Amino acid sequence: MPRHRGGDHTWSNLVTACAGCNLRKGGRTLPEAHMALLRPVLEPHASAGYLFAGHLPENQAWLPFLEGW
Image: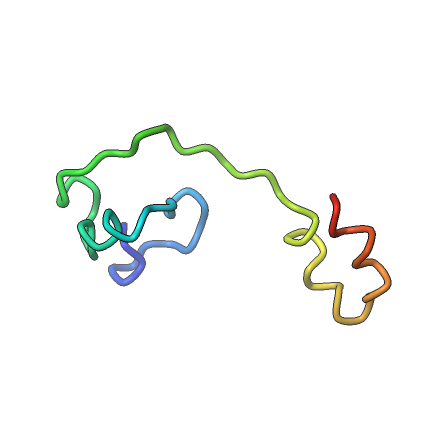
């Protein structure tokens, strides 16, 4: 469900698309746009940046250890 129509901002409701496909789909659902996903949707792995981003402002010393993870 497109976000502007009440869809959630979660990994299960969002996919990456090239600019052309994103423009073609617009604010419609995939069936409404007569489009289909090329691959099944999989939950992404959590990165160190995602897991610890909220703590970095007060813990900048962590940054060198997290960048390569």
